[in-house]
Image: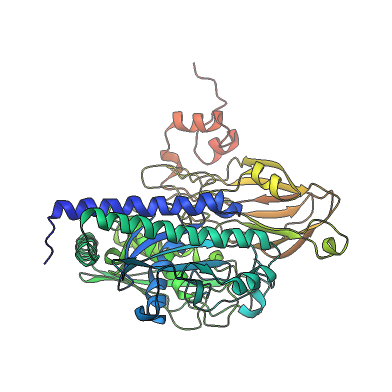
Length: 554
């Protein structure tokens, strides 16, 4: 039993939540890459001696946060406590341990207090380039996709492993950014450890056990109580997606019981030959995040609240890809699992679940064309993050150009143009792209990009919802699909490598979210305001919503 009162335990819990947020901001402030510094593609957390996540920063993305929650358990068991020394930091980017592809580094640092390991800090962030085929779907296996680093010691007693750092830089088109981002990750772990020790000293804690048990047990009870409010039963859903070589079916069976929720991907299409496959840890991260957004969303995310959800899938299906499958663009399908889950949950909780959205990040991995380096031009690699519209909610419109489920902020025009020789000549919302409904889906956006110099550049596409747009719910209509083309040329497929020549303009439309409810039930003043704001056209107001906004009222 703990000697601390419930009030004091709650105060310490709140302090942990503050510590991890400060830890995350350290990573963002120190990072070199815009996708970390400007877009927040990170995670940060504190773990107990068993490797159980006690707190995670709100800043971050579920793909990093929830994979980190399991990865630290794996890393904790890979190294013995006896071999850990103050100042040690461990690293891996193994997709099946960390965050699903090679471009995410996960670090874990043992925290020492009174000369004993009392817990761990951890963090994850995206690195722009680790060699190989790069951030695109063209690899035939994970070996094509860059440098894989097994669990190893990055820092030993405060001294960086300089050989490993040189290997990381030597295998990248952006060695300086990789160097800086790795040091930023180390700083994040160190800062979290420092603050945790200060907190423990302040509250007279020799170890984290009483606080850990309070956090995990309280969260577990609260989550099970929230699950009990969902009608028990088995629910099924299916999504048909664009895929690469062929269309892909994603299947889910959701079983709700008093002791927890089980999600199974049986029936899902097999592994692709291209790099759109998803390790189960990443599919689990987003699936559980989606469930937690509806079931007990007010309960903090930690080992206790996560433990009530179990995700499985047949080995070799595209949502449980096995090594050495190519997985560079695992987010393309992994971030669609919330829509798949919500297809099930809508049956259990009608009126509680949003319509489908653009969902997967519409990112633009850009890099200089191969011949640029040979001619002495500027070699670069950068990944821009952009988003479509979210699905309309049961009582509100969807959000335009907003990341759900990833939470990654969109890349800023000015930052993009300051770090690579690219001009963003247009970025604007696309009228009529949100699915009509009583509540309208969020709008997608149009982005136009061209070279700032007389040099070509490459784009490595892997996006979804080109063929299959976000579906509406309860009478709501579909959102607009995505679209890619160069100038007035034909539409391009959503996956593959494209070369943009000097003077050409790449046009990139992100999808809109689905609508919710019958569009004819949308109030006329709201439709008129949508027209006035340029969100929908006069024709759409008339055809989809049944309101002739050009008619003069008398």
